Image 1 (cartoon, rainbow, N blue to C red):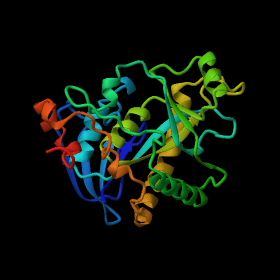
Image 2 (tube, helix red, strand yellow):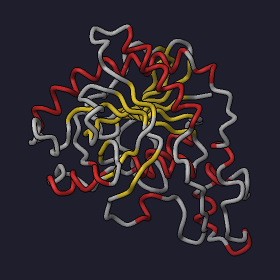
Image 3 (cartoon, one colour):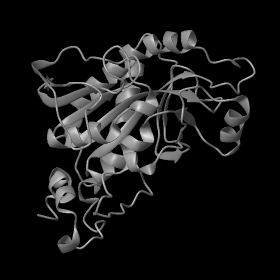
Image 4 (tube, helix red, strand yellow):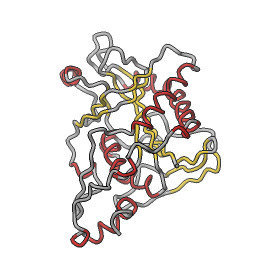
Length: 294
């Protein structure tokens, strides 16, 4: 087992790692967001990547998700825990609460090609009705509950389940958009996780999101305007909690039984006959499709 951590806004490093190595990875899809930091945390092999790069120079719409997940796969990552800042679309999901989404809704407008490794001569259709790993998500939820119980603010809550709507960005929502998402029953809103979840499933990597609530988007009558200062304030408060959650997931990783089926997602998904596949694409995708197509 090797656990990958994708750090969102405010989370650019993890303290306490041993045997640290920094690695620059090249992929067929271009450069990842930053160099990867590998090492051990409490004896567990981990790989860390800041989603937006060190110092946050990469906008959500500029993230090379394919390169990020492909590199994780080549590094042997079996599970990805994604830490993300989100806005809340529900009254009960308060700023500084933690949400573990179990569904995603895509509102991005970019080409779907950056949400899949396939195309260019190889077609595959993964099942995505249940887009997160239930084992990893449940472990993340229980770890978050333990972290909050030991924190200075035990009134925070963990919400295990909910729909993450992935907006385009980089601007925050209009009030009309925010109220529309609320009317549709969405739970939280962010700009990054849908592509990660799809690509992790194609790469047969278990994936779960720990969504750290920073604001009420702009729908709430008492919190109508989302500002960067507001978000940053909650980000700083959430960062310590996020790091503690990560450490507890690492400590309890033995609870993961690999009975979720994530590691077999491509078993019946590749449609293209091997003899008609684009040879370059087949070679490029060997880390992902190699156990099915040589």
